[in-house]
Image 1: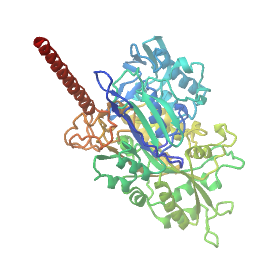
Image 2 (image 1 turned 30 degrees about the vertical axis):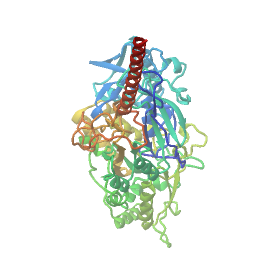
Image 3 (image 1 turned 180 degrees about the horizontal axis):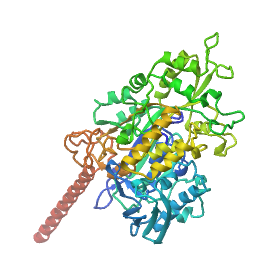
Length: 637
C-alpha cells in the first residue's frame, strides 16, 4: 500500500458538536443526545471505499473498520481472532472456526460461506493470472501457499496450503458479505461502488464519505467484539499538516497522523498531547521507469523519455549523486534511517545492507556516466546514446511537504551531472493513472514519466513489498516496470521457506534489486503521529515500536475509553510502550475542555442523576409537609 501519501487540495474545517446531554423527562439514566465522536486526521485523501481499489494507507484504515480480516492483528501484530475466532494448523491445511452466531451489521447471519466466497475470489484471480481491482489484496492468499478453500459447515473453513508458514495469518483480505456481493466474480467486484452505509462485521461501518473532507463511521450494533467508547469514528482529511496540527492543539481533533519533524518537536511540550515516533515498515524512493527493458516494447506517446533509464549502469551512476544522510537530516529532521535495500530494517534479520553499497560522490558519478557512454556536450548537458540531452521527468504526490524538499535536492545533484530534472506534483488518483502502462487496460495508461518519488508501506511479512518487483505486477503494483524472471523464481522459492533458509534467499533478492538500481531508496521514513490524552485513553502502539493508528488492524479503536472517567496508568512512554500497556502519558485524568462535553462521560451523567434525586427529595418533603398540615387542620376541625 502507498505509504503516508497523497491528499487533494481541499480543506475541511467543520467542527463537530458532540455528546451534549439533556435532563431526562422521567427518572432514569441520562441519555446521550449526540454521539461520542473520535476524530483522526490525515493529509492523505481516500481513493476508494472499495477495499479492492484502494492503494493508500488511509484506505486500509477505512476498510478494516467496516470489514473483518479472517485473522486480525493484535499487539505486536500477533494474530488475534477476527472473522474466525480460533484455528488449528494441520499438516496440509489450516482449519478455521467461524465464530458462532455472528451477524452482519444488517442483521443477516455471517458464516463460513462468506469467508469461502471472499477467499475464493482471490484464488480465482490468481488461477487466471489476474488481479482483483488494483491487485493489492488478492496476492496475500497465494503468498500464504493457499491452493483451495472449502466450507463443510457454517462454522468451518478449511484452507489447504503448500507450506507451514505463518503468512496465512497475515492475509490482508476483507471478508465481505456474500448475500450482497455474491453475484460478483474477481473480474467485477473491483468495480462495485461500496457506497455507505456499508454492511460488514467490523466494529464500525462506513456511513458517509465526502472526497477531500472525511469518512464517517458509525458503531456496528452487531459487532462481536469489544465495543470502544466512541459511538462514531471520523477520519478527517486536511489540506496540510499545518491545519491538522492546529486542529489537534485546539482540541477539535483527537489524533493526527503524519505530522512533520518540526511539528512533532513542538508538540512534545504541548499540554495533553502525546507524540509518537513509529518505526517504518516501508520507505520513500526514486523509482526509475524501465518499461521495455525486458521485452523491448515501447509505448507510442508514452513510456520513459530516454533509453538511458533502461541501462543499469546509468541508474547505478545516479545513485552516487544522492547524499541520503543529508536528506535524512535536512528533510526528515533525523526521524528515520538511510535507505538501501527493499526489506526495511524494522523486519530484523530479514533486512541486509547491500554487498556493494553506493556512497555519495558526485565526481565518481560523473566518471561512471562517462564510462557507460553518456558524455557531456559543449554546453555541459549529459547526452544519451542517441545523442539527445537527458531531461528527466520526476513525478510525486501532493500530500507530503517532504517530497518537494527532497526533489529540490535531487534536481540540484543531478544538475551537477549535466542532467536536467523537471519535477511535477499530482493528486493520488492522477498520479496512479499516470504511472500505469497499457497493461493496466486503460486507454490513457501510458506510463509517461521517468522517475517517481513516492513510497510504500508493507505488512509484517516482507512479501508485501517484494511483490512490487515481479513481472506480473507491471500494469498493477509496479511503479518501475521492472521485470526479471530470475527475481520471480527467487520470490517463489522464498515464499515456501522460513527462518535462515528464507533469509538467505531474501538477501539475494535484496542485492539483486539494489545492484540493478531498480530503485534508489532514499530513506526509511519514520511515522510521526500525535494524539490528545484529555478526552480518550486506551491507545497503544501497534506494534510496540509503531504507532497506535494507521498501522495494522483496528484493535485500538475498540480499546478507546473515556479519559474523564478512567484514570490514566503510571509512567510510560507511548514510543516504547510494552505490549499490553497503555501509551497514555503519566498524568492524572483531567476533565474535558470547558464548554466541551464531547466525552459524554459518566461524570456528567452522575451530576444529572444527583440533581434528579435532589429534586425528588425536595418534592417529597413538600408533599410530606402538606400532608402534615392537612392532618392538623382535620384535628382542629
